[in-house]
Length: 114
Image (cartoon, rainbow, N blue to C red; front, side, top):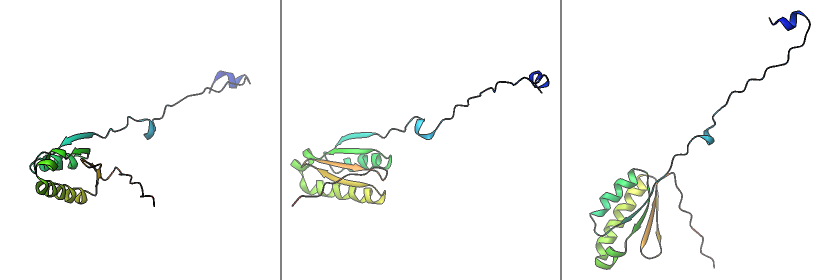
């Protein structure tokens, strides 16, 4: 008991502050966006591993498109299967690029206007 209370004096309240850390204030996890080139079907394996690591990928397909269209189609089909298996998404951007996103990212598609 404080002496001030014994003599009938009012004690001023002491204020204590506790700093709380909220989830929003913690350091945000960063997501990697990686630019890759696919020049042969064998490059698909390297890109698949980056997909499994949760990266967002921008893939330049121009060189393989110009040299071997059949191999490009096989590589894209392989990447599409992996993307689907990982609950990700994949879309063409222009004529020479793919974007591949993990399940925690969304590729927004504009609806075609009539």
